Image (tube, rainbow, N blue to C red; front, side, top):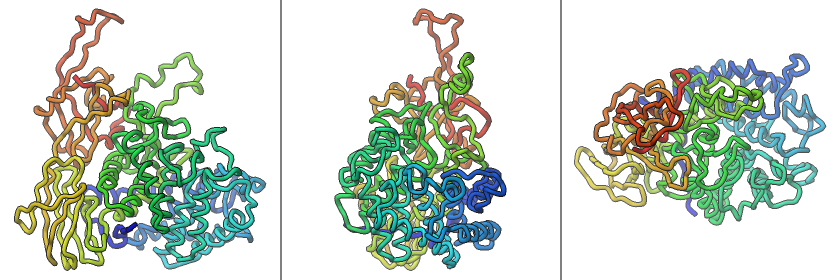
Length: 618
């Protein structure tokens, strides 16, 4: 099984345009704002190990939150060490504290050491190995960025203990972690240090999952909830907690790549198909229920109570990129694009300061506060209507920080015999085969340019987006017809070349499989990679009264007024109100109107508002 590699972000410089602006927002606003909130909430104090002095009690997942933030800082330091100096100083302070607090046997966990030492390695759902995994990833990134190995040495000592307790002695009261993460972290550590024992440890945690009698189910007797229903060689469907599951699948993909295990890849293909064909929202979000934050059954995709955690978007990008390393299939890049422009972007406010944990596809404000005679604690659980700066479970903000800090990782693949452009993001990419400069007006005008300099291969390929119905290609100013194969276009090029691409973008109505109950008789608007929605701030309250004809696109107008993208305005109808509670259907009446559709990722940025992705079809 041939594996390929993406050109790493260290060799990529984002230049201008949509994604450079978003990346800068993360660097200049989001990262610092998360830092402020973490100071206020005691997350940094947890790793200062000062609970006895401050009384700020650490939580079992605080270490992981801080680790992801440190990892983000490390990635950004690679490009801008001076600009990150203040954040680097905090990282060094925390590393000092971890070095002093680490037990002689190597154990390191702020909550268990300060609050519950009697529970060390006794309960698989207390996030010890999950936190360790994120700290390992942070330590690797920090070592790459600074060349200093102190943090890495701390985590290697901890890994020595984990190896002894889990693999050699079997003295822990469980075999595999409740929340996956350490598996992929250990393989990353193996690749970084070349030490075989880390690959062996990762393989142990992966192969023991669902394959031992020691692990107790996380959710009572439900082994699906913690991916314990089958072992990794018998996977067929996606089950359980979505983020945990995708971290697991990412670890399995890494193991398949390292061991050339085609069976593992085949099983992951089944899982990928199950997700994308039966369990995924149009935005690329996953997770149908906030109850255990999990996958449910096929086609169960409710809009109002959609879970679609922001961390799922990050995890999906991790999974798809690993699958693309194993197989050149355009469906992976298609999904990555869908997630990028929709589920990923919606997670953060346009000013970069606030975040969603869940990302619903419908908000109806009349549902909030309607349970007037019910105690508040018993109210129906509905997603929040406005993003907030920190959550009690604040795993998403630093995950988003670290993702955008290495966005360049997802652009270009080195196939060995040539380069392949996967995502259209304006950047200069230095590769072993010459430099590539990408400039794009992709989501707005559906166009991109690829310029090669000193290119040493004969061909280059690029992904043709799934929404593209007509492709125009100019090579050095002349119209050409590239060879098309399985979602990719191939061109023969010289040492220096210029490719102009026009994917001919236009608005399109999408319908869902009729098995998706919520979306029967409804359509969603997409314009290229971007999903659109309507809000009451533009279109009036109770959006479910609005209906649109699929012919309405002939009268659509576009205006460049939303975060450098177009809004789309088109004719629709709205049911008129009637004073009677029930009345003769023949007396039902509609009034014409024009509705304004905005990019889904921009919803909930203008105050509380109803929001709807799937609009009734006239």
